[in-house]
Amino acid sequence: MADSIRVACVIGWPVAHSRSPLIHGHWIQRHGIKGEYRREPVKPEELDAFIAGFAERGYVGGNVTIPHKEKMVALTEPDDSVRKIGAANTIWFEGGRLQSTNTDFEGFLASLDASAPGWDKNLDNAVVIGAGGAARAVVYGFVQRGVGRIHLVNRTLARAEAFVARFGKTVQPTAWEDLPRVLKGAGLVANTSSLGMTGNPSLEIDLAGIRDDAVVADAVYVPLKTDLILAAEKRRLRVSDGLGMLLHQAGRGFQLWFGVRPTVTPELRKLIEDELLKR
Image (cartoon, rainbow, N blue to C red; front, top):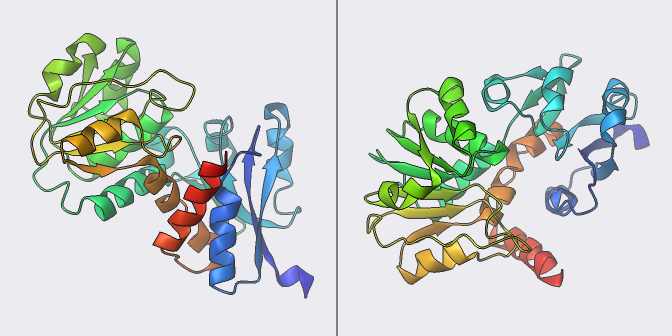
């Protein structure tokens, strides 16, 4: 019966660029699930009404992308990750009530675990570049993993300072001009800014001073290999790229909607890589 089909979606404005339908569509087919995943372009001023009628539209849950992640906090029952990060990217019904979580931090951590196993063992000095929504997710994840010290580097220092109230004194706000200093001896460097993204200025930093066993991660996935990743590979450092984060953040939502925990396979990665290269 048609009404037995479980349907999820991605909500954003715009949303045509989202790769989520390709990711979830691949898993739906692979696991033989009677389900569907759609795009829902929703204007900011229409979000409240759309969510109010979410169940009536036949949805069991969905993903939330720009510009709705922060507003979704007030429209759902948020978990700890959403409250701390201040943004939701995954919603689902439980007990008839719309719940929300943030799987961006899970995706970042899982990508690191897959690309650089053991990266968090005795990690006492990490550098995070950027102070936006992605940075909040990454810092939340690092705090959960017990990273001893997180230098948060941003051009506007006040934005970095706001992280201390949100995440505690593990976070050390750092001015942009102090980046070379805090890179010395760092065990992990993570770019969460838009620097290095296609159409934006490159992120050009000197990695010579970081530890030889350090890991370099980038949340940017267009291009697939940013200048930061290329510089890290030139130094023969372990890396974790933005595409890994994108793929791994999708798994828990799929499980919440369709009841199966999917895995990120080389086949799925190649599927998304090929789609990105077409553009």
